[in-house]
Length: 248
Image (cartoon, rainbow, N blue to C red):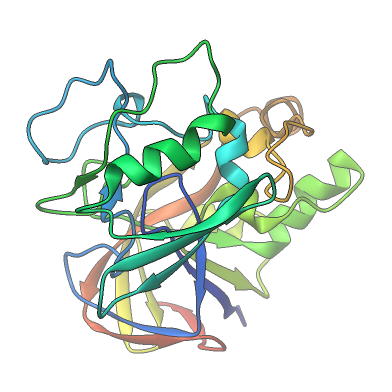
């Protein structure tokens, strides 16, 4: 295997924008820094304070596909986030203090037949990932290309809302990592499980419109709806674009 790390992405507000990084320091037992630190519960959510909660409690791309077209930039020093969307004006705000401003901004692209977004919460213990453990998602370009061959075009990696992307593998090789330890740069991960995907992946991340049957293609050709794997950092260290991928 000659895999290399090609992309690092974080999502400061769960399901509301993605930001590219060149390098990041990872800490054992923690999610990617500033990834899904905030989340947007809807009015029907059942939450236990700011503790981790399952995805159905939050506004997200599976139910509101237009959210997939949001891009984010986080100023870590001031904890100010700037969001852009092709159908909305740019907005900059602090999620801890300016939730009302954000809710007004995002309302025009939210479905009218879904529970409305009701605020922003800040995760107290770990990022609001899709798992109840502090996961970092790892995805393969060659597997994405294999899906693209069935779709007749290459889907944007942003459809999968992953953290780390690697290239140089065989298609689906990453599934063999489950139960093993992976080294990227100076960090090491225990690979826990495959990622089962949702309707968010059917939306185009440029337009926010559903335009690809990603789930159907997975099911019809491979008998599942899984893409990518979840890892947990077990050795702290910095990772950077171009780092080698090594199964230990």
